[in-house]
Image (tube, rainbow, N blue to C red; front, top):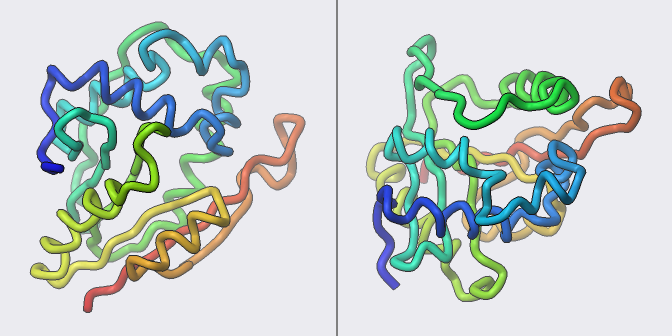
Length: 198
């Protein structure tokens, strides 16, 4: 299976793969608890993010876009953030409030030093457990190790903590989103995981 940079013609398949892969993800379903919002046709829930990821040339994928990884390269502290364009209808007030809660706590737990950031790793359920995720990580591990730069990710599933440990990551921090239940319920638990340089 060839791992390559994703291109615009992959857009629809990438959205569908991400939507199917994260259908029971605690963070995604906390952000999009209503099935009518999450399961819009053709993976529309990921259209805004995928538009920006493709614009910044971040995604890696398999030939058929059945698996993808969103890797952000290391940046120096204080460097300007990538430009993000909002597409589609504006989010609801409730969803804006949820993003406002999760964004800062994720930023607080991210390493200060330059690192490769794995924002998303997704494999369509029909293709899971075939080693595609490992290949999508390895393509950047080779660059990171050559550069002497660590890698970092967040996960919200305990079983994935064990999965990522197999690839050299270890838990750096853990937290609960909105532990005070300001939106009526405690949010999901998350783990920040760090892969040091060899």
